[in-house]
Length: 633
Image 1 (cartoon, rainbow, N blue to C red):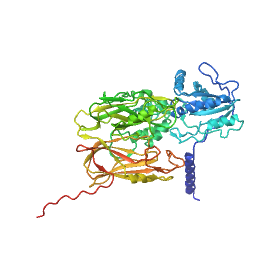
Image 2: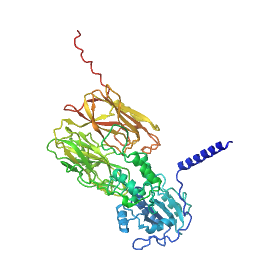
Image 3: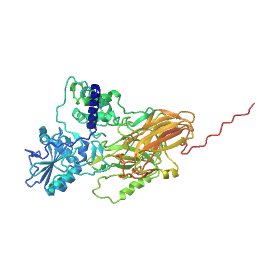
């Protein structure tokens, strides 16, 4: 064989091996397994040893209160300690951060950790057990021989991706085997979470990209509004040590455009777009690939001062949830509906509004509706009259429904998602807010691993000039009853496509679009086809995420002619490959209000040229009769 061919073959083999290595899942770490851990002392701040002479097994779990995965296991660890403590198992947590002992104790109390926790000064315990991740669990027998290391369970496939359900309780299995005198069935698993940072920051002066000079300005401009203490992000990116902990994820999530969370892949120009430039994405990648060098702190820009109050000044009307609502530590996300009376004695038009979550850590988004019928008040009263259990994790005002608000709203006033700033409508345009009406707000709550409190407010700014055009929502995607009954997504279909249309039958102006699907959704697009022109894509989302729904406002209103058709095209994945599929095995899913049902909508924010609601049809209207031609000569 010619030498050149041999060289090419060797290169191809090397590439194949390299790609195979890259594609292979990470192997469990086996450091120290089967070895005696010498001089392992677990003492609290007062010098008290956690272990007693009758300890039959010891569980040491490395935690970080800066890691959302770690925080999510607080209640799990507390339950395990309660179950196995009477069997002679000692539980202890090790904090790997820079927090003081008092700060650690405060966080442990907030998360109701329920097991003793120590600060790992000098990374002594980290080194003794060769810990690398938080959370990472270690099980030692009565002779301090390491019998298990790895994850607590298989609740996560990645540190920001939860499984639908937990199927393998690895830490519990290891304890059961050890207490039964059996070999641990799986002594090493891959711990999923946040890496433990032990090395000093790199300060190489010749680094082309550094944190303080290059990365921090991009974080300030695009990320810190959510990723800061008390805000919506699940972790903070305010310091070098916080950012370096997520360097790889920052690179991956910005490269894939999953962050910042801006879902439109195609469409017209919108206000408030959250997009990184190609140069910013390249900066994050170069920094991560170089080992995340810190650089010189003197290169850092001044800290950003974030606006915490009302962005447009004091509102004309503020409605607030009457008392704090308690969000339980764990479980599925919660949708809670609150009824907020306006107390208005006269009709008003709203030109802008701002949602202010009382606790941005847990408020994922809101949808704001209007009710003049009292139906929402009746549902809230029904919830008050219900015999509630004293230990219910979610408690307080409002009522819960699986989807929507449980009523047919009289109107709607937009919604809110993290990073969305108030949008001021053009002069002469406003949302109609009737007197004696209620604001009915659906709040989507995330859980953080600890009990949280929230008391959300909404501020409304009334139009200062006469309103001649009322903002309303048209439901592109609605269909006749028979077609709704026929809506059925078959199981195991990875690309089930549905298309719906709406025709406006009068001239109007288009201001916004809000696509809407549920958990099976993969892609959705809303297009506009005028009677005498080409089709235009208003918005297209190629990677649908039920958790990131928002109203997209066009930079300029779009003139719409009578006879214009709006199409909504949606693609659903009802297979096991869809990690959001609520059914395992997959089932037939039909149109409905429940989260486990499906929908297809593109809500259009429109205003008409004359009083009254903009007229539309969900079935193709008859063409208008030809205009009279007059008398022929």
